[in-house]
Amino acid sequence: MDLGPSLFGLPPNAQGDAEEALPAGAPLAARMRPQNLDEFVGQTHLVGAGSALRSAIERGAYPSMILWGPPGSGKTTLARLIAAVSGARFIALSAVSAGVADLRRAIADAKTAKRANGRSTILFIDEIHRFNKAQQDAVLPNVERGDIVLIGATTENPSFEVNKALLSRARVFVLKALTDADIGAIVDRAREHPRGLAGTVTFGETARAKLIALADGDARSALNALELSAHIAAARAGAQQIEAGDVEEAMQQRALRYDRAGDEHYDVISAFIKSVRDSDPDAAVYWLARMLEAGEDPMFVARRLVILASEDVGLADPQALPVAVAAQQAAHVIGMPEALFPLTEATLYLALAPKSNSGLRAYVAAQRAVEETGSLPVPLHLRNAATGLMRQLGYGKDYKYAHDFPEARVDQEHLPVEIGGKKFYEPGERGWERR
Image 1 (cartoon, helix red, strand yellow):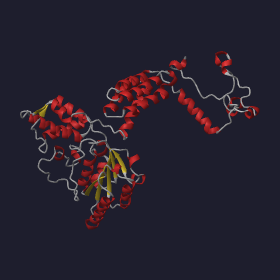
Image 2 (cartoon, one colour):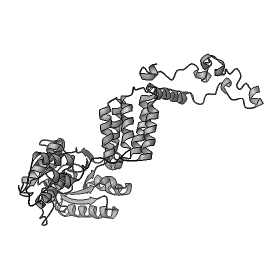
Image 3 (spheres, rainbow, N blue to C red):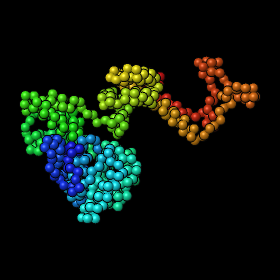
């Protein structure tokens, strides 16, 4: 169970020791780093009692791995604990600042140590998704030979961000965002533990609940906020009681887990689209708020609404597309925060509208016919007879002009002869289209 955030934990040292003297005034999160796996909060599916990974760690027989999870879920802390529990050396690099030369030095150091005393080395690469192909390739042969055990940490989907060759030689373990109960356990222990605040402050349920909620599953955020809240309370005439206002001042604003280029971006927009498609206005407006409050580009949302209006509402309510386009134009003109009004209106309209995907089905059927039959010739009577030669060749012959017929409806074949009479459009049974 992890009682410290992923940023801190065991210090990066070549011996992989679990303890190192902390400087005076070290952050609360650093002081509360877990000392063993039993103190690690959350991720019981990975390192709970009796789990396969925990058993492998305790035996020192764990594979190279990629730890994938949101910020504050314990990736770095777990990597350091693996080294401490197994007695491995630990070398940490950040993909933000390290280059190929740094990798080579670290690997050379690992090889020297292995020859000298047989101890394995964990090479921990934080934010491994930021390494380019050349940097990832530099690690690959050393992972294959067992010169190092690689542990990479990433908040991005490794399927997209890590080379397939490297990914095939490492296990991917998915860490989940910590639950409110996990964050509560971390905060309570930090407030009471001698390494933490040692019971010098208290806070009521309202303040505690607000801190947990605003942390949004991020242990690092929770501990940093607890420490700052305690300082704010102390500055208020030496108060020892943390109030809800202290927490709000410390955290300013909930740090929503949302990355405009990462998995959360695609997961949330997927939930938004499916909520509108499934005619759930409450869920649709919730996911809309999740995106806009986290700083999503309102025009990205507006484009999705235009697509939804055509793809999922379609001819069941032909007014849906003008509503969506109007919302897109309005959002473009007025910008945020007022753009939330037309975007919300369009979201609710589309969610409540009858649904039909007959347009999509018609196009897919026509597309399939084009793929199967190729470039079939246009029937002569539909061709444009722009010259005398064309007319002599039969272009436009026997074409029936629609306006010469009642209701401007004419019975003539408009498809190539080879697929004449084929039906692509099948009207839906909802809303306007049924009529």
